[in-house]
Length: 255
Ligand code: PEP
Image (cartoon, rainbow, N blue to C red; front, side):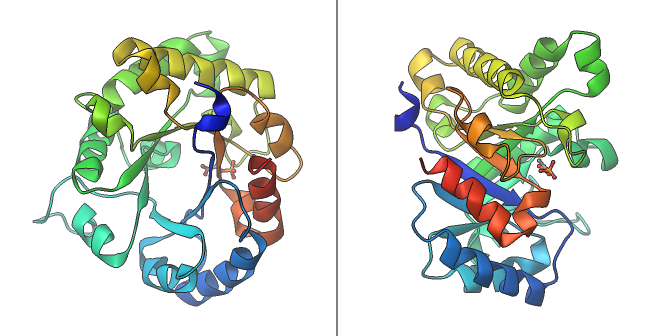
């Protein structure tokens, strides 16, 4: 499938930044700047900001996402948030398996898979993050790591469900470090991810999946990264907290 036929998606990952009132203020800055975007624009925000963000984004082209969800519908999981809670409050997308969750909160491919299945069952669109550590790249096992993550994280996800899955390739060494993968490195792994999806499903299903790059993407490098055939969008951390920078990335994806 021609890249132009895939949905380009720019998603901000606000991480643990912004209070509800600050979220409203930032979205009030962002929404007018991205109103003519020719791509999907999402802000994934902390749980407590979601209500304010949904309100601020009402009537605009900006969709609101969450940064995680639990796999159970309800129950004794103190501190967790269910997919039903997110759906009811107006969330459409959810980031899953972010490397910070894997690194600091014990997230594994098994739990990413459970969360992904639960999100899909609830009608949420998961943005499933995969990526290698610097050590793994240096040991030349990037493809093994990515193949394993793709296979395990999407285990038991049907071809029909895959239509609602977004994959974010985020080399861990490039997240929040200011070190961006070169556009060739990003393209190489995004193309590899698509090839893995083709193996697990089929070429047509793989061709339809939006694959984002994430890792220090900013207003200065977005054009080059997004020009690559298999880079369909971006998951943006730091730069998503500055309205003008985020809007510039959205503009780059809209070309
Ligand atoms: C992220 O958190 O997903 C991310 C890519 O962060 P940054 O853009 O700050 O590297």
